[in-house]
Amino acid sequence: MEWAEKQGIALKHIQPGKPQQNAYVERYNRTVRHEWLDQAKELATQWLWTYNNERPNMGLGGITPAQKPKNGRVNSTAEPC
Image (cartoon, rainbow, N blue to C red; front, side, top):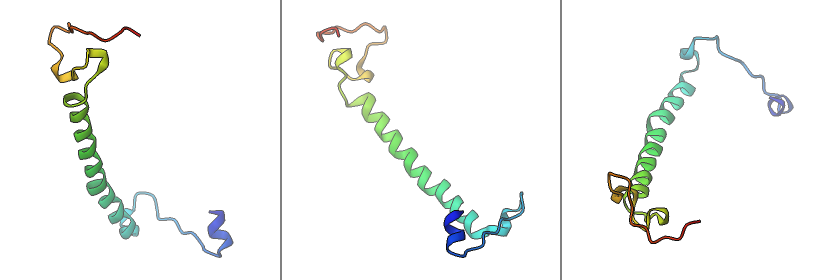
């Protein structure tokens, strides 16, 4: 707000509950929500799959979390911390 005042720019606010008064910004917000956040969600999902299925975990004896037996027992050769 200080920057706008220094530049001689008057800020006008829309009425609460009236997003149609600022359609361009609302459209931009929708684009961010539906395109950028969906892309971020996809990247996070890919990372999580890699983390659980491809990355060895030394705490599990060098196997991936997906390879861990259902009973929770692991034949670990890793040194305890």
